[in-house]
Amino acid sequence: MRVPILKQGPYLIASVQSALTDQDLVQLRDELADRVGKSRARGVIVDVTVLDVMDSFATRTLRTIAHVIRLRGAETVIVGIQPGVAFAMVQLGLSLEGVETALDLEEGIAVLNERLRATSGAVPDGG
Amino acid sequence: MADVARPLSKEAGITEEEFARRKDYLEIGPDDIDRLKRMNEFAQEYAVPVIDEFYRHIMSHDESAAFFRDPRVLERVKRLQVEYFKRLTTGEFDAAYAENRLRIGAVHEAVDLPTKLYLGSYAFYLRTVAAKIREAYRETPERVLDSFLSLLKVVFLDIGLAMDTYLVRRERTIRHQEEALRELFTPVLQVRPGLLIMPIIGPIDSQRARRLTEQLLAGIRQNRARVVVIDITGVPSVDSRVANHLVQTVQACRLMGARAMLTGLTAEVAQTLVNIGVNLANVNTVGDLQGGIEEAERLLGYRVTREDGTPPRG
Amino acid sequence: MADEAQYAIRSDTDVVFVRQAGRKLAQELGFAGSDLILIATAISELARNILEYAKLGEVRLCPVERDGRQGLTVIAEDHGPGIPDVALAMQDGYSTSRSLGLGLPGTRRLMDEFTIDSRVGEGTIVTVTKWIT
Image 1 (cartoon, each protein chain N blue to C red):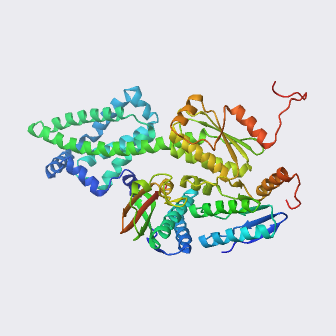
Image 2 (image 1 turned 30 degrees about the horizontal axis):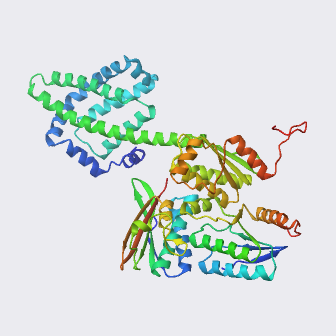
């Protein structure tokens, strides 16, 4: 299932709607990399609230997304990892080192706003 | 009755095969059954006096008498004992019999009857019965010892069953107590909006580590925490396993968007962890809980000032 | 009790399908809370291993009972190349290629019991079980 990507102010928001296959994840990665340049977004939020499994492939792909987006000049925040999912991930030995995380969409936007304020001094209008 | 009792044999792992194996190991054979059945006649007669003597003994010692403060309980137990005494000499030891004996162990565990009293009372009971057997067989004294030994086999079968449920139930009780303790001693406290502290007291094993982590993660979501301080001053020994659990807890917090700090690592513990190669590079550690809270407040943008406007320290 | 079920693993959609089926079965057996997530994640990793190293195989989900306790056993079997050094593969941080390990040590931590039988040129069977606590 494709993940819808919405533009909100200077940010792109990808809200995962249901379980994702590897193919879906790869597609999300490519689409975000493409859209972030076209839309000149300053930040990307991937909302994974609905996911009840984050295995090695999903984690690795999210990390890749964050790295690619950074090379494209924007920041990524992964939001909505559920308590049980977080626990399973660390048991499995997976982490999102070097990737910003936040509790939910609201917190994610706050994190990006802080970042933006720190780097440019400008307060975005979309937050 | 059987419906209530059946889970006990399952709980204690006493299948029908296992029960048969026990009887086989005790060498309970047709001769024993025969001797027991023959004793049934006088058992009917002596059941009440034997049990009366038995309880006179129990009631003459404070420690054992304490279990029968309620006279109604005493009456009921005496009645059941009379039934049991008669039952012993019917020579039928089936599944229902086993269930009944298993129940005894569960009851003893529930009232916390010390095993010394159980076994001590049993010894008295056997002496009383032995005297009755001798009396009944005074014409044929050669039958006394054989009959008593047959009875003894069944008694050991009986004790074995009761002890097994006693132990199974005791283990369960201890497990429950441990669980209760775990819950009791790990509060997740919100000291300011966005800031949680979790003081851990007592040893950490993988089970407890999991529980603590789950509690903390649920707390993060519920309180929308952005910083958490985990204080391990009360954890007696921090080895590499415990340290790895803590690292995982810190990582899990981070996945939910909260920064976690560890406080209360002593100098020795820190040294040990470095020596055994535990990677604490990504874990923010602060000396003590107070320092941890101050650091957390700083991260959250709080600034503590006195009412008169002077800074709190220096 | 629920029956044993068998799932062929041939593509990434099968991975999603089998872990969802496993989660549902675990729930029916009486597992709750984060155990469901741990089980689903373990199944996902095992199915993924099949896909990655053997291309195809199967995952079986079996309700089990021992000493009155209910559990779920997951058996992941393939006829792929096999693992030359199982002990090495079970070490944390080991990887055969790229940055991704076999994920077997991690999968072991998610479950209560773990056994692996692998023969080079014949295939691999990983059996894991989780018990209701």
